[in-house]
Amino acid sequence: MAENEIEPLMRRIADALERLAPAEDATPAFGPEDAFVWHAGQGRAQPVAKVNCVDLSLLKGIDQQRDILWANTLRFAKGLPANNALLWGARGMGKSSLVKAVHDAINRKLGRSRPQARLGLIEIHREDITTLPRLLAILRAEARRFIVFCDDLSFDGQDSTFKSLKALLEGGIEGRPANVIFYATSNRRHMMPREMIENERSTAINPAETVEEKVSLSDRFGLWLGFHVCDQDTYFAMVRGYAAHFGLKIKDDALLAGAVEWSVTRGARSGRVAWQYVQDVAGRLGKKLD
Image (cartoon, rainbow, N blue to C red; front, side, top):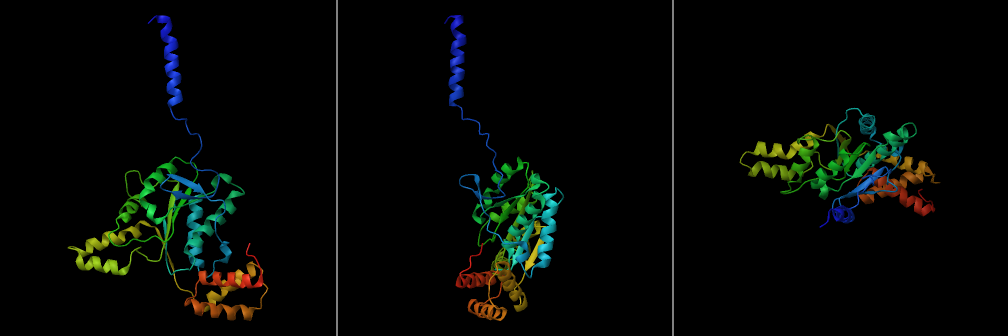
């Protein structure tokens, strides 16, 4: 081949290789939205246009838990040290609502003066916990700070997923990224049923060590916030708070009498029951809860 033919040939080869190579994706992994859902199968986070949350002021009977989680999250948003948090306890008492409400309130507080300080909230489903390393690798490269949130986290039987989560929370060679914090809710303090723990004690060769391994996951959370069944006065405060917030035109005695009947039929008093009752009242009054 003549020397003057080599250079054009090399250019054609280079052009062909460039066309075959995948185009570089300049799109950032996360957009400007405040909330996302992690889709493990697709390896991406889906933006959430509107987060299903209530105003922080509407969460009654959990003042101490609210103040502690608020302070911890605010420190994290400002780049200060903060702890992973486990919110555990009675069903329907506002555990997941509190996480979303605190996230929203802090973004509204900081977003006006420091838009770059807005926190991202990423929900990861319990069955996708094993893909946390992939998610954290993506988040590590982000400039923003993120709360990774898992609702209703629990482990049963021979599930070994807890081992990967335990390592990711505090252990591992890389450790948790500085721009990520992990919040979880569970109905159980140790995220596993008591009978499972008792079974481990009765069947293991070294019961103490086996049980210690199972329950040590909760130790990886610096904050334990307990939620307990509310009394009637707190339940009434929840109902009144929702009714006033949404401008429901109903006499107080009728509102509370209906609230008692509603709680009896449900066999429980909780923030969730109060919200369900208020939705029923609003529907009967023809009032939209916007």
